[in-house]
Image (cartoon, rainbow, N blue to C red; front, side, top):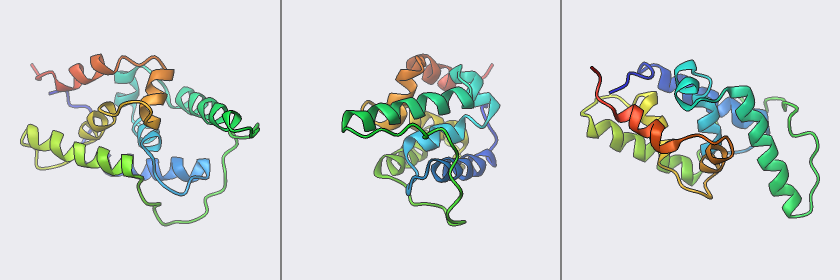
Length: 155
């Protein structure tokens, strides 16, 4: 297996996902926030071939397009919002599914810990119209290739 991140990184990923949700003014941690949280880790960004700033811009563009589709104009989505609370927001149902999938990925390789690479595999398993899947598609990420590289046995 590719050693993408350390076991301790999973805590950082979930913390940064919560920060991304707060930054966007969202009340819950979605799969898109989890993806952005993973992109704080250089190894994940390199594996996917996208940077955090670019992903944030694309995410804002997708959000603006979704709002425009229902007749709302939101020109200031790129401005960080103040953090409302120190408590971690709850997970969306999609994010809970990613966490369950991460457990399955860890079990499949007989790992006793859920590592960030397992979280990334969980994210990469999502399909459109899931927010993370939409974001990956909008950034032209080769999801199948990334999954294959993550699952490849180490030499």
